[in-house]
Amino acid sequence: MTGLKVAVILLAAGLSRRMGDRNKLLIEAGGEPLVRRTANAYLAAGADMYAVLGHEAERVGAALAGLRLTFVQNPNFADGQQTSVRAGLEALAGGYDAVLVALSDQIALTSADISDLVHAFAESSRDRILIPYYKGERGNPVVFPAQIIADLRASGRNAACRAFIDGNPGLTRRYEAANDHFVIDIDTPEDLQAFEVNGRQGMAV
Image (cartoon, rainbow, N blue to C red; front, side, top):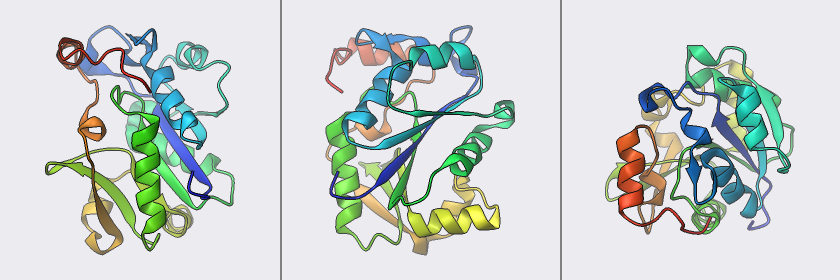
């Protein structure tokens, strides 16, 4: 992966309330649980992974069993996504050039998409937060330079906070994506149905 050492904080602790009584991360997508499909895309791109668990941690962990990753438990997951990002940051080993904060439900994202994003970061000055956009719509994952991550960890400020990113435009840079994969995620039954109707369920990771 461009010679950079890259870590991914995979947020897999949420309650997925908008999906109703189903845990969206365990829904089958292309023959495997959604969370595993997403994790495989990042692993295939060569990143180290820290999967943050919380809600139904045992079931989600089982869906990720056998993959090359580090599990991180977030006992405060019910307090919001920012607690999972904080748990992931605190678990990180040293020596990374960049850290990607990633959602677990980006069903369309492929390893090629991730590699292209990291390559764009590698070709940049590597000192700003890189945010993917597609036709003006903001997406995920967000790429954080190592120094900004170190500063946030030391200060206790929250890297997941959109207010931090929006309040520091000088620390950000846009990545104009070639496709919509960065802006698709699965929050509701309707999201899943729309993806299936478009015939992309079996697309490669």
